[in-house]
Length: 292
Image (cartoon, rainbow, N blue to C red; front, side, top):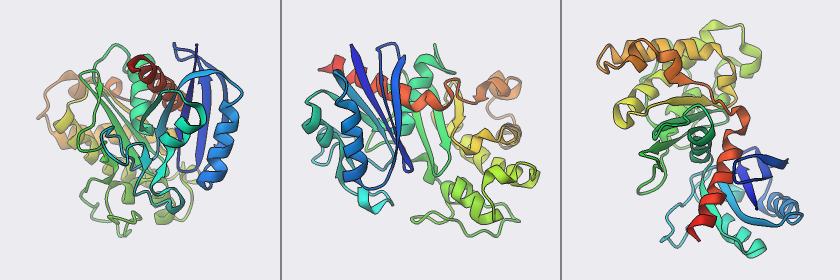
């Protein structure tokens, strides 16, 4: 039995075929351009395999409510060509198999709680810090959703008193994503993050903003593990600042060893690395198949 997985990102689609245990058999990467072009290549890839179901972890916002008339669509994304695009229906029309559908970060959270850094736990938070900032959560073994899926990258944070950068979010300007995502780092400092590795002030400021978000997530969701992925978090020095600021902000209020003495094991990088999301999409496919 083979499952298909699609990690649909704002800059690239990763497509894979794998087995029920998450083992990836074959994968490709496709640039995210316009739906007709990108999805044409996606469909062409999967036509080579006899897949039983397909899982999609998509950039958002998306509609994850099966009872909604726009279920399975990418909705109010800043990527105008993809607004209101019916990605689930497109795949159903092409393959006629069950389609699992959620956000890319919820898919990554599912991958990490099943095979990764949160394996064996029924709760975790996966945050990606890259082109944007998004978070997915597992609560009591289930993907967190309600009115919609979480949009934790757009919470408001206190500005650093010396930070005069206006913010880059097209909706909220200086929300977390507007101040701390990759494009904000580049615009604030004049270079891409990868070229700023030796500038400690860059990563201390990044840690300052991310830690505020983590404090709020800890107080609201109380996750048993926090996993920070995405391109920005490949600058490992950010973790030191994030952990330090989280402890400072909580100030002993959350009196658990995970925060007080074992924070290096509590706020971690993804064990599955760059495969967290695509592994999670295979698990979404498996769930869709089992539900059908």
